[in-house]
Length: 77
Image 1 (tube, one colour):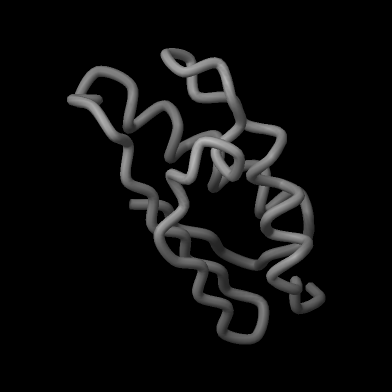
Image 2 (spheres, helix red, strand yellow; image 1 turned 180 degrees about the horizontal axis):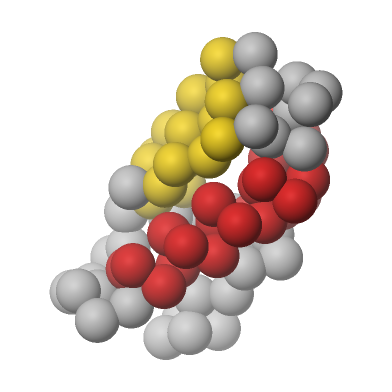
C-alpha cells in the first residue's frame, strides 16, 4: 500500500456528505485532524450538532473509502 497525502485524504473526505448539513465533510469544517503514519490514516471529525445516530455510519464510510484509496488501515473518530 502507498502512503496517502493530506490532499488525497481530503479528496476522499470531500466525497462524504454530512446528511444534515448537505455539504461534504471538508466544506462543512468538520475535519479536526488528519494524521498520516506511513500507510495508516487517522481522521478526527467533530460534527456541530448531536450526531449519535449517524456518527458511526460516517466513520465507517471514511474508513472504507480511505482503505479503498490505498491506506492499509484507517480509523475515524
